[in-house]
Image 1 (cartoon, each protein chain N blue to C red):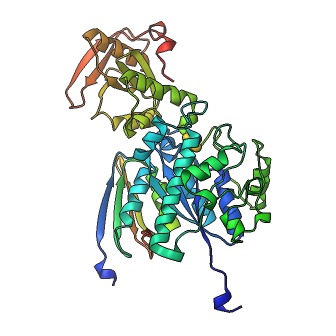
Image 2 (image 1 turned 90 degrees about the horizontal axis):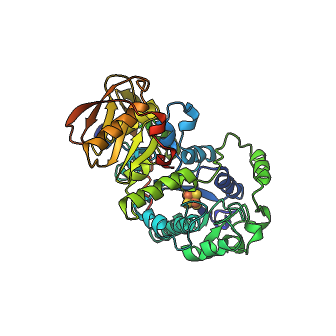
Image 3 (image 1 turned 60 degrees about the horizontal axis):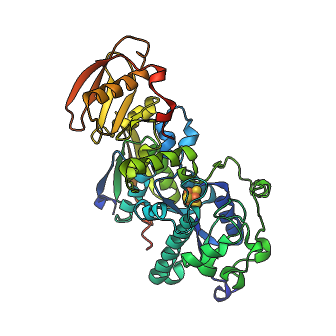
Length: 361
Length: 85
Ligand code: SF4
């Protein structure tokens, strides 16, 4: 075969979440000679390395960033893109609504595939044949109740603007042929027809490819599928009387015990050393409470106290989670964001003084 | 030649992974092959993630370490700075 008759190497960009399905989708493409690069989107809600980094009890292996780990296993380049700002509109105003919790999965998928579409369009404009020919995802029909149904697959393709340049190698044979299949860049017969929630076919394929030790997130790829997390986010909106958030807000919802004794203030109390270290970094933004007379947690106050009684009530709650909980008195320091601090001595709250209803999440 | 290498600094303090990696990626896109970059972070996860990102994208890790509550990674930009588009 001469140089001239060598087929052009087709290139795809794959949405890589860090889970098994997208990993398999990439591998299936590589087996067919497609050159793949990965893209991973940071929404702010991702269940990623940082949440593990906060918890000291986690083992080293769990601290890895799964998307990077997958890229390394597959030998592909990886673009990690911060979409946290633009993503707010997806979370706040999902056209297709939410799933079981505050997870706007269908809008989220459309948004991410659209971002990938813009990337390949731009790359084609700037790099011509060095650009990308199509987009790959690890979606499987019926895998998720809301976003991955047979009816939603064409909605994602159309509304994202990717149209028939979006290929799902794991369930392609259940769907109409896409551009890469019609053009013969990939062989449809060697794609898959997975459907439903049964994970056995994926496990078998993983075994065939010799992949093990992959991440298997239970609920979904992000915290929005978590009920407790969604409750905390809903509480935040309610307390502020408006639906909006900053990146710091949604990070803090991942950490500590959240208690709301009054509608106008919430306590975020660390549960162990890692969370303590994490909350430390926010003391310049929030009033904080720490124990002085005995070891105890660090608490941030989201909101403001209306009276001295409220301040003392909050201090008593924090004392309840300290080593001095059984003592008659505990001294605590209340520090403002500007560093001005003063001490208060209170009797630690009793279990009955902290009703379950105050627990947010 | 090697002598013209520049040393750049990137402060990712207070950011949580993967933000330090994203900032590193975006900074490297503006640098040239052979340039060195020192990234400082307060998230210990950066000690795993930034070297992993470097291995994937062909950059060399020259040094990693901890200084009190902070960690740092020094890298040298490889052949392709990643600025494809
Ligand atoms: S689980 Fe989260 S990241 Fe995954 S599709 Fe749903 S909203 Fe998007």
